[in-house]
Length: 208
Image (tube, rainbow, N blue to C red; front, side):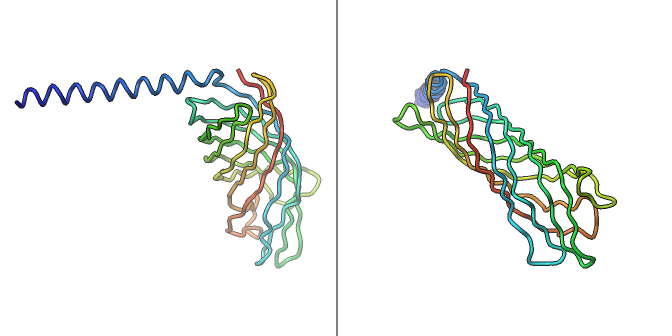
């Protein structure tokens, strides 16, 4: 009897494995084009931190975001992005106001959850991940002793791809980034506080 039960258990386990394999193969087969490259124009709106001294307020700016994504199945994928902008970081300290213009580099990676719809031309998704933000001071506005600084960031967001043709379409997206306010390695500019960057964007993509 125990041998019979063992055989049934093995057969059941084997059936489950086969079922999972078939499901995974079917899911992959439903994604005809796994890779996608996107180019988007972005707006960058940073939450002000002006409820203390020192305080910080970053100017609003525009930039671009370039990304590559790979869809493993109908439901899941991953993507990496690089973004660039330039803004001015305004500080108020006990010694008075200071301003630094900085090149802003954004390098992030995220897992993507795709939301299947019956509409073939609309492909919504949500994402979550992390990365690094690099603040590189320019020569226009600067403070003595300021240095290039990298901050870790958490990124979340969502959007939708709108297929115009099989290989080309429009992408609309919102990304939110949470990170520590930069101080450019200057103690008097250190807020020791996290802030939030809102990054809406729209652009184009190519699938292959």
